[in-house]
Length: 499
Image (cartoon, rainbow, N blue to C red; front, side, top):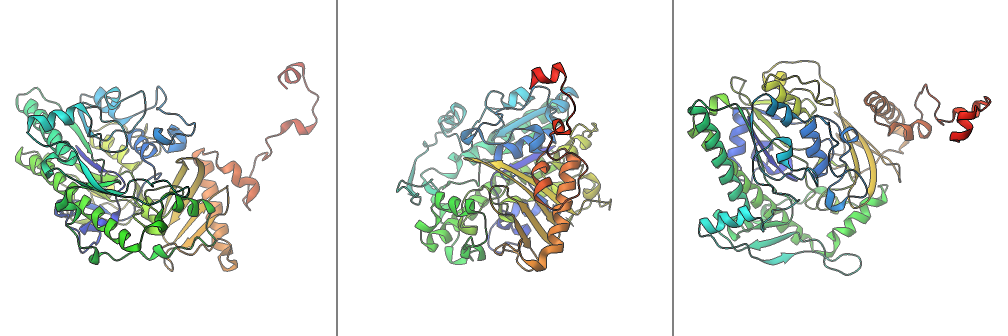
């Protein structure tokens, strides 16, 4: 199995998903040779929790790794001992496991602790000071990392905003993306050679690119690859935040969107496209190596991302406490030997479903991946019954901000305890500009979706439902106050002492 993953990757940057300008031939070919999922979603739009869900097959509220450690606000920083992971299961069954690239899965435990080979590349961005990368540059006579022309806005207190983009003064062969693909190909060849010698085992090889996550740091050839005039700005740059949670306006200020001209946004999107093309080329090198080694007809290939990216949509950058399609819908391509080619599936599926799919391909039990469902029936062209919704959650980034989302085919409901809830009609308002939660004509839809979300949370065991119980018109069958002492029974010595 080959698992290719990007970070903060918008669906609309790929030709296979309809972008007429971006050059992504290798991923487009993968889509043509396998299955493209058009309703593929992340369980949460934040790196570490989403990646932990992939590793465990569990929803974030269950595995409890809820925030990136760089901005952690008091949550767990590593998975608990005894937490199921697909990698440890595959390792126990004799698989070779490799992971090249972004880990971002905890503080004290590395990918090696979960059975993966490969250099420990920690953090959220390309670790260009890592010893293995520096050795790669030296061994190949390549120049060191150097950037100029940083692009950033100005934050509310007048300080420089987060770096959004910069020019990289290295050839493509020196980029971190090229280095990752090179190391992945080296490991692929080693696994294949072991098999040829009769020493081998089945393998699971993951390559997790740090891009196209911002900042977009690229050589000139990619930085200027796309004419900004080709970029059609998203309709949601006209976001007013009227009837929206205040946190969205605050987040826009953090990312300093309004301190830069719109033409800068257009250029940033064009640069982002260049980053996508750079990554696509490196994925192409890996896929070519699979073919050259004669592994193509017996290797399953996945491509997806941990979450999306705003790139100016809703006057935002990065990701955060706003559950828009821009950051929750992600690319999802799966190629399995012998399965139909060029399929497009519309079912709601999740990054978390990759866990059970990996286990299913390995012939392992999928039940330990408790919130995951194998995609193999869909990839093989079958038509099983499937949920007509996607359930997502968010717990915070920079600060705690709990949210829950129910996405159905037409509507999206977001519960925001700290302010106001959101309801979007995605047929009438695909850009999610108009929050219709409080509109009288949406009363029946609002009630139906609220009850549906409530029931799903209770069924899962996600205690977020306790907030919803007294706040909304939902039926319940338990003591919502959790105050049994109010019944007036005489207190025993034990209960008096505990009180």
